[in-house]
Length: 619
Ligand SMILES: [Zn+2]
Image (cartoon, rainbow, N blue to C red; front, side, top):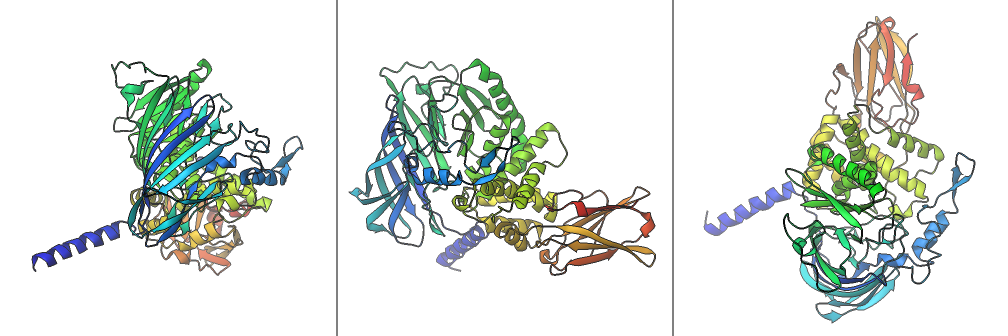
């Protein structure tokens, strides 16, 4: 073999190895260098962002889009209209008999009532491509940039955007002067490039929820009144200049000479950047032995102190379990920031209100499914909110030392949604659900059941391996539903396409029931019925009068295999249940008179919408 051939075959081997180890889907790449000045008297900021943009797609792009989120906070914006329209839908009545409407209480009709100095806006002076100003077309929260020279496939180009914004009064997520008096909660604040991926442009007008961004690096310099302390995504690059607790031990901070201070942040391999500012912030730091460093930044008010200390101590205690179960948090630091209107996740930081441990835990777990995976949340909100809810519930149970099933709340809220008749498929675009109600139960509850129920189908040990493999394989890559299910299939050795198709793309429900128990010679014969339209494998626990128990497992033929035995009790694996058959019977090796009870899915991980018919107790 000559040298060139040897090199070529070496390259080929490397290419094949990496192609096998990693998904081969292309993705765009971005680097933002943002310089802004915040005027804390007018609540306006102006700045310039210089963007390097790698078009890694095979496509020639004749236009690009930017999000201008803050234009949503103006009377009659799409967000305002949508909120008021949903507010007309009556969902039922509360405990006092008053009607409950479908709007988000934080938004309601508040946008319509904003005065000119209270609205938000995001305007661009120019967008230059490689130094040349381009044609701009405004579509409220989406800016279309028509390019004079297109972006060629596999090319790198530079944009420069000059922008002016006004921070809206806090309505939803971002804004000024939130309910707890935090001056600035600065999310969705800069012109942000819309992601272009294998499904095309994701130019979703901002009407309420869910985000998606280009993977990249951020360098953000923020100049603001020197009395403000800041916190944000990324790591402070000039800690010994700004101080406020960020400085190294024993460093004396020189007082700034002018009225302002410039804060320099950097974040690598993220898809968004948030920051917040207040003149009364203080912080708690917690350094984990093998990383990360946690910051807890909150308003210095005596009444808040104990609650924030509890949040900090709880996160410190939970982190090793989280890292072991879901994968290590790979960035240097993470910041819990008091701000916003509830809890909202961003890469490397969260804005939370009222220092609740549950909210803090939920938002932190988003670091995996929003931060690290960067799933398209508009199309797969459940892979973010649902998986996050699963991780939050599981971690909370671990913290409490509770060994009971952690996910009952999700099942109960899903069952109520099914009963309401308002359910829509999980695959519905987040903005386009008919009600806020159906969206939130689908994304959070049905999405979290996707995982807990997968544990039922493949076994808990496999589920744990799947979670870690998913983290390993898909972080920084925008996985979709199919990418996840392929990981689950490869780890478990079971075929699971049917599960994804039924649970994600339909509203078909699960209902299994016990049928007749007959005599088969000396033995008992148990009949199961599938009453619901969605097929599942069946765990059937038989308890005998002498106290012994047997797990009878009926695999679904679509999985082409059986999960490993999960219980300490003896497990008997039966023939496959062909999904078309409404009934299935199996014989057990003991007489009818020995049986005390028979129960389908005693673990209750299967989301059976009618559990009344799942158990028989022999009198
Ligand atoms: Zn969430």
